[in-house]
Structures are given as structure tokens and as C-alpha cells.
Length: 400
Image (cartoon, rainbow, N blue to C red; front, top):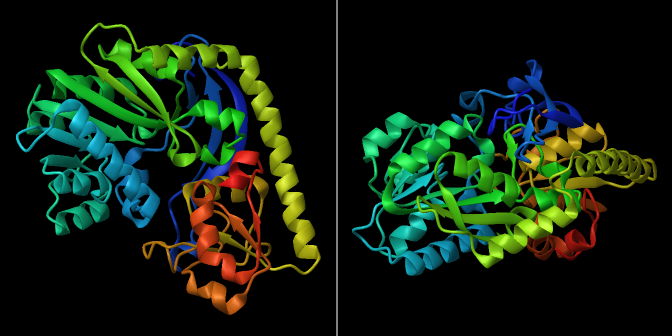
């Protein structure tokens, strides 16, 4: 296949099998219906270093109705609040500024802007999440971010455009970047956060690979891609969300990148993130980790242990379906979001319940799918005396 960013030839290095849609949690009626599945395969572009999926699921099928509400997590709310405060101060934003948040979910960042006295507009394709935001009086356009959206808001009108955990979801990434550039004022700034594929490789976080994430960025690949659209990365920093993310700042200028961004790119070069061989070794490690997890869970079950999960995140879909684990091994998955409670997990068909079920069933082991919230989950469940399983054990994950 051709690279979505530069058009060059790509090479496959990893397959996680046929996977269901990661956030399509099933109703009772849907459990009896065939589930759509797609090959979850990663490709590397030697020309621009971008890692990407081979399959493309139509975005309308993934995002028109969405069950992940960002505001459910206290840590996520804190992260967005701190980010809004930092951006307001750094770029001197006020009530007269035009701020646009792309894929604004349930309005988590819009709410933070309002608390800071900054007017902001959201663009969100999921009708159910858009409704939640509008019910709070948060201005939100219910649509995908396209050229027509720029026309509605006003070309070259935005002082700041944000896209937090969005770029990975966009198959037509060149068109997306062009639209961002057209929306920005000549002195406007684009701020994006993406899961950092460097951390996925070094931390073996293959559960962060799923069908919604079409693109997997390093700073090297992200900088090259944005440059094609006329956006220059002038600063970059690593942040802790989602097990390791990257925040970049770009504008229409031609200034050189900061010393921090130059250092990050140098580190990527040393790690071999511009070479196919690095990713082929990663793929071998993923295969081993999947086998080891399955063997461990089956061994515990054979010894009569009760195992449940915590956190019906999209990453749980990848883990469960790759390892071939279902309700015969994991009895249920706890999730704090009412949107997911009462449904069943994609592919594996494990019931999703509220945290009150833990008090009744008293499991021996809790498999923490949302390992990036490990400490919060431990604080909620320590009264059980259960042991915790991290899908892929690393020192960083075990510490939370």
C-alpha cells in the first residue's frame, strides 16, 4: 500500500489478526449478529517513517455514535484543565480569541476554556457526545472536520486550533492538515497531542494499536507530514497521557524547531525508529507477549481463580481478541462509564458492569486494561485484596 502521508511504498511488519471495531460495545440484540472485522496490520513507510494501518474503516462507522466520553476520567479532566491554562497563558488568549477544538468529544476541553473565560467552539462527529456538550451550553458543530467546516467557522479566523488524540484517527490526513492550515490566522497556532509510537515500541504497548488508530506517529514522521501541508513544528514535548504521548506546536512560519524537538528527533534516530528492522523486532516481542498472557490467564483459571477486568477501553479489545480470551476466562469487565455498562465487549463478548459488582463477586485477580489509570483503579479496589494483572508487564506499568 502507499503511505497516507507521502504516497511512498510501505512494508508490513505486524499483524494482530482480524479485529472487531474497538469501541463498538454490543447490546443484547447485537450479540447475536455478525460483527464486522478488519485485519489489524501495521505498515512502515521508509520514505517518511510513518507507521500506519493497512485497513481503513469508514470514519462514519467508527465515530458517528461513540461510547468513549473523555470526562469520565478525573485524570483526563485534570490534564485538559492544565493544558488549557498553559495555552491561555502562552498564547495570551481571551474572550475575543477564536479557539477551535477538533473532535471535542463531550466538551471536556471546551468546559476548561469556559472556566478560563475563553470562547471556544467544538467540532464533534458523534451525535450522542455532541448532545452531551450542547446540553451544557458548549458550542459544538456535529460534523467531521472537513473543508466545509472551515467555511462555516471562517477561513484564517482561528487564533488556536487543537486536536487532542485526533490525528491518529484520520485516514485522509493530508486533507485534514490542509484544512487546519486554512482555518488558522497567519499568526495562529496548531496544537496536537498524539500517542507517541516511541513509547509503544519501547514499552511494548501493543494494546494501543487498534482499528480507530490509523496512524502511529514519532516526532520525525509528524514533523515531515505537517511540513507537506505548510505547517512547521516549532516546539514539542512529551506528556504522560495514554502511557506516553507527544504534544507538538505548529504554525505557518519557517522558523527552526526548538532545542527540545531537535533532541527528541535525535533520540528517535538512536532508537532506530526510522528503520524497518526496529519494528520487525517489536513485532516478534508482541507475538511472545500475547502467548505469555494467554498462558498465564489459562493457568490461573485452571487453578480455580476468579479473574475480572477493569477498564473497557479500546485497548482491551485488541488484547482480548489477539490473545483469544473470552468470558470463560474473564468473567466481566468493570467500567466507570454508564455509557458502557450493560453492554458486551467487542469480539470477546464479555459483559461490562459497574464497580458495584466487585463487592458481590470478590474476584481473586483484576486485569487492569486501563493500565494508564492503574493507581486510580488500585485506590478504588484495594479493599478487595485481589492481585492485579497488567496485560503486558513493564516496570513503568507496574508502578502506575
